[in-house]
Length: 537
Image (cartoon, rainbow, N blue to C red):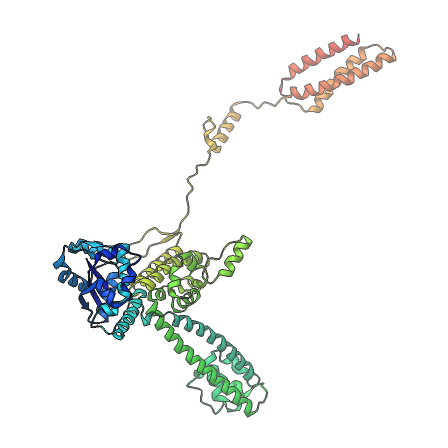
């Protein structure tokens, strides 16, 4: 049996002298307690030394990925192929399958083989001759570092810790500069308050104060290298009529020293911003193209590192920096925030308020892809970021122009634009179809009415008002009452009650009979009068 053993210095091929001892796995370590005992179990047959660390790294990475390197393939063809009938013990089962497939060698892997490998490693210095222990340890350390760099894809340009520190320092410098400039304006404002209104730029203000000193020196000072001619003339005019108080030379000296500090910090901030821009283009070029240097650096700083940021989904990248608002909204059951640090990106800033949520969501989705490409990809170009940004800008124009559609246009003339109006597909009920009478115009109807009036004599309507009807009824009753003879008082009371009861149905019948002809009414009334006379009798 042959044993393939990998070291940091090269490949070693051992021949097992006594295979019976491999059957006792628990007691195998006792056979390797001393170098003499180890030499009785295994014997070195061939050792292929690596030329340099690069070759060792290539061989180690090939073994980690389960592949056959060039040096290993050379050793197996040179040594093991001569004894193809022998079994080859290996430590990696996946590698054994590849060797068996490529070189047609019988490979074995078992717990006994794993224990044998461990025992050989314990006595490696004595079993492999011609290899000093110091050289072996140095090669092991170098290979370990090289392999770690390869696994982590380590590059000095990929250190995102510098970005985290740089953006934090940039924010601190901005805060200090604001405090210093505010203090300088307030301090010198006691002596020359009009200067602060004339010069609005902070850096130009500090340079002017440092050069002027006392306001009485404005007339003799040359500010052309700091200020334009118009503003310089305004400063000189304001100095002549200034309402400020007088200050000592010591006060002016301290103010000038403060101005020097502001100018130095401003220059250093400019230098730091250039450094941050270059570092962002080296580490995350696609993210920089998508959202800009400052926003990208703040996202990396907030997540801790570029790799941690790459693990976040797009929805988290969108609201990164608005955690407090998010949890407050979840607690109060209100709307969650639509954007966090990504709000300061140029694409979101140039959008209308209505479309900021949509653009921030789309930008976060594309930015998360760019972050993963920068963190895990091998290329360092910004082509993907530029392509995605162009897509987002096209989508932004589409959202801004939403509702506008092109009606006409030729190659020379511009197309006209008209607002889009949504046409409802819901059909409304048309009541004009209910009537079966043919509709005629008002003019035609009027003409027909005039013709009828001209051909026929006008007839007066027979409809009477309620009052004359009542009068006719009362006249008949009076005639009937005159014909009757006077009777007893009791009969008169009964007659009055009967008349009162009968008057009520008479009134109701009169209202119903308005539309009837007058002849029918008279007949009914005469019948009623006769019935009343019979009742009275």
